[in-house]
Image (cartoon, rainbow, N blue to C red; front, top):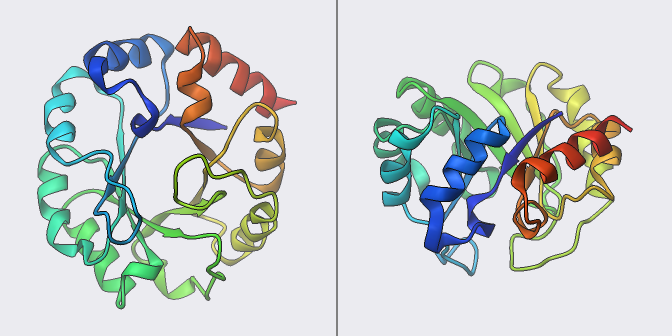
Length: 212
């Protein structure tokens, strides 16, 4: 399993040092939640942070747009170094067109689903979608992990087996093995990842736990 630490949970006062530590830990991706305060009731990270941090590392940047009307921001994010951009099914009336715009600007395209959203038939997104993000907690502060979302993940893999499937929300060493067994390729880890004293050690613990 691959791991993507979420910078929304990192100590923002020393992000330069955090990026260096993530490089040393050899994480697979760095995850950015970009919120608008409308689609979700928080605003943690903006786009300037992506531009400022991009020169500090070659680790791929995984951008999760938790916002309504995300299309206007896609060209800017791609130009500032986003390697993949994920938008929400709930926020896109024409998701195939939005995913196509992401690909057109040179990034991998992803689609995310809130816990309450049932998975539709995803086959028509195949020309564009590379990543599917299943939120495993509600998109709000300190929401608990929802084990029932792993059933949703397993069903989704049958609909789109060639995509990369991500679990995002409340992931710890206690549940990451279950996520892997359900078919998750990648786990976004926030609070748990940055709660430890050593980021490389925390990553090792997650990898060991996911392997069983």
